[in-house]
Amino acid sequence: MSTILYAKIPIPYVLDGVEAGHNETMVKAKRMAGVLDAGMTYVGATYIGLGVVRKKIAENEDGTPVLQDTNNSTDDFERGFVPMFRRYNSKMPSWNHTLN
Image (tube, rainbow, N blue to C red; front, side, top):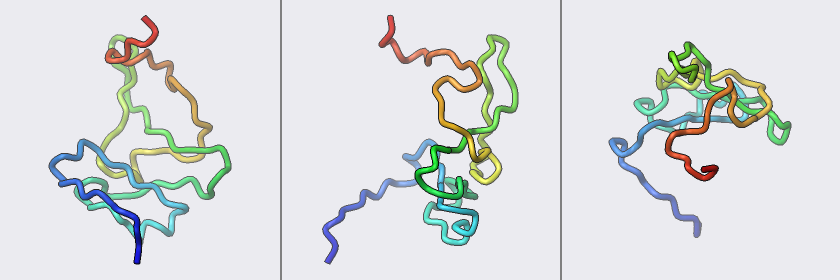
């Protein structure tokens, strides 16, 4: 008997979803509903210091990036990037006032 509890979140409450697996063969074993994420992304291995990055498709007039979001993680992300804060020279989010 399992003692792990999982929360069920109704689909209308979900703003966005990204499904990630170990490698590209995991796409056949999707766990997330297709209406939330039609695809899946991966890096290829665990504990290798690499991650995924959402694709930049444009820039706003103020220089902030416009990131791709088609609800398909296979298409929306590039793989094999070193994680970093403020990728694409992004500014601090307007809701973050911790450095004021």
